[in-house]
Amino acid sequence: MSGRMIDALGGEEAVRELVETFYDLIETLPEGENLRRLHRRGQGIGNARVEQFNFLCAFLGGRKYYLEKHGHMDVKLMHEHVPISPEDAENWLFCMDRALEQLNHRGDQIDRLRAIFRRVALILVNDLGEWGRPSQSAEAAGISST
Image 1 (cartoon, rainbow, N blue to C red):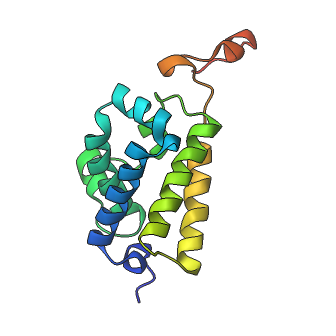
Image 2: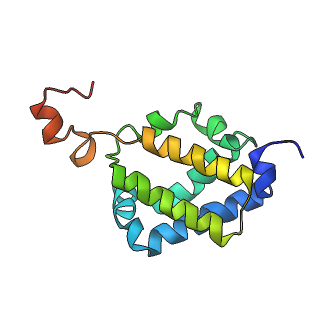
């Protein structure tokens, strides 16, 4: 085995299956409610399914579809305008964990992947209030988003 996470999952088709399963869960589970709302305010879940696949292929060591299309792989930049609470991050992780479980992805590499997903999800948490503006608590504390 090459050591690439994409190979451990089973290649691009397995990544596509993971993304589809993940977003099916986002669209149906109560934990996906606010994530659905955030996607509706953006370009929608249909677009997210495509871009998540593009991103994860490269993120997991495969072809860099997202980079080829957008010129970067900066996950913070991708989400800088989206208000992401700790609860949103945990709900994203919950849905991804369920998708991995449903698809029977197990083992040490999958445990490492879960840890990486957790680290990334938590760095995306921000203090944006309603759609890209600092929350009232940040404004009251004199914290600037610039």
